[in-house]
Length: 147
Ligand code: DQA
Image 1 (cartoon, protein in one colour):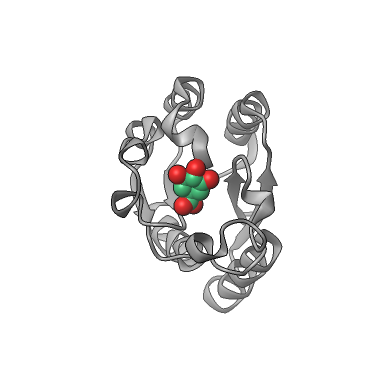
Image 2 (image 1 turned 90 degrees about the horizontal axis):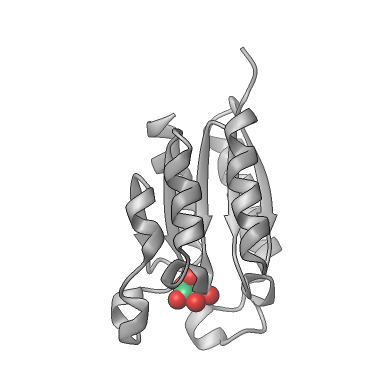
């Protein structure tokens, strides 16, 4: 059997990590975070492969979720601000029957009230938030148990 593919999806403004509000999101770039995840997976499980996608566009994220059904075993998504606004991303997640985990760098519940609700949470198996870049790494550990 081939390797199992985990699709990471990062939403709007996450391409700005490193420069963007470092007091909230830390100083690592998205690429550095992804490299940490790659390293973790290399030590963890040789049966897993990762694929990363970032977009600032809601429609592209919906397309990526739909396409994941064809070749991926699971999705880990940081929807960024779309988490709090997007019924379209929720519907895309609900439409595909593979394990899904929502992640956030920051602890949403310590922040503004509008961040306390995520539309996409209803479409995932679990949520990890507040661990900074480690939210990404912890999500892989969770996903390995689901797939
Ligand atoms: C975020 C939290 C969101 O509220 C925010 O809009 C982001 C990043 C996080 O990873 O903490 O863009 O998803």
